[in-house]
Image (spheres, rainbow, N blue to C red):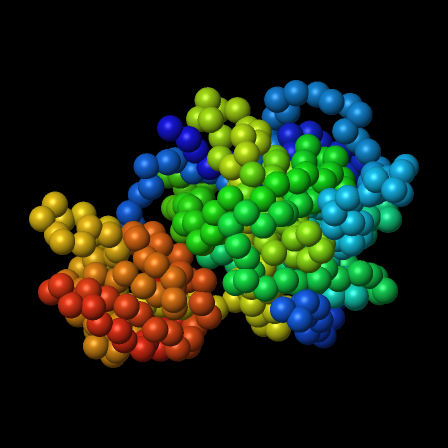
Length: 400
């Protein structure tokens, strides 16, 4: 049995932590989109790849590195695509140091705008759901360090935006994650174990994978021990799977294509289940299209919206069912999106927005991936007959 483990904070403390001053809020800026013209529980237990540092499992004093490693080219005649992709994307990847009275840690992030908006994981800035008031500092590729202000974070898809006061920075180039193929070459860039600008190579191992990880929502009852030590329930995410090595500290960093364009935000890794954390070639990233939409909403409003179907669902596991996959609708919310579109209890959802639905977790992740108010097509089986419906999603915020 395996378990997911977030890749966020490395297990060491910075020797000279920075305490950021309070930064006044700046007007919201649009992300410059540089695209190329182009409650079912999983059998696997999960925890996010960025653990909070309560104690140090090992001591590596040389990890207190103040200058990110450059992309070194000693033989220009032997440069390959990995070098090119890393050189293109690395100036847009940063290292975050996060400290509070609850603990400390580190993670990675990517530059969104020229004036200092940065995207990372929510579990990095909240120390895995322990605090909303951590001091965050950002180390750029150049080695310069800045105090950062938290703009907002989204616990549904584990993303956050912070802001530093600087201009002339290099934003990451976004690729269209809907155009990825299994087998595409990828590079992961981040700060595993605090080693900034680390580059690892791999491929897209799978697409439209659903995983469950612990929510980063700050919980007022940390003694509950329901999921990850903070009492937080799991959340379902649709992710890209990769075999590029991802380790603690990579959380929030970049997964890029062969051109150095962002295809995903590194989120989680699978471990062998023996309590040890490290890459075994099974890593996961939040697709760039999802990350871009949520990042823009956080920049605009301080939070992000998520769709709501208005249906209680479960895995379709009836032994005598002619179709033993999909999400079985058990109950509809009165006046909800599903009821309004004509769906009924007993329907089995097998498709959502052109993607296959094989489980309740799939459907939950796909619905939450969309913004509130999104109009989307849903395919269902009803008494053996395949039907299609157009649904206008509600707002998941109404559940709070």
